[in-house]
Image (cartoon, rainbow, N blue to C red; front, side, top):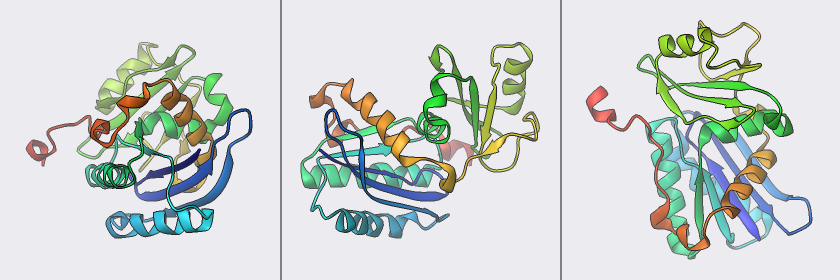
Length: 223
């Protein structure tokens, strides 16, 4: 099965084409990563075309995308493009939580062994946050710095690893890791996403089922 993965929910474009086969390792056919703030709207489709061309396939059998949280415009571009291509190619499409795939992409196998906190700069004085404990992932939050500090002080969140985008949060240790496009392992992200996809019912993954994971919801009211 040939799989297309892409993400523009942050200040980057990532496009991966890979071949998934039972009982064999994931084979990467093409991979593109570029930091491109505010350029995704006109670059994404071209990157997808180039990725498929390099992989020597006309169309994939499955599309997987990070569908948020993140930039409102970036999420819209990712989800709209994925839905359009899914409808055009008549193939399934599956969305995964951006916070989960970034933790997986930066930690690899260690994501199952360590406690971690990820905070994406959501602007407007809030962070998109998720905590990974030994029991799994928390829900994704759109949360203030004060609320995050409270969870840490009350030992509700006890991270061994700290990840962020944007400026270093004041409640983070100086040794925290900044997530950027170049330090995310797309192979690990796709492997995790495929595991989640195979847990779902195949007939539940058509283009109409892919929804943006905005979290914040009322962007217009908060401008």
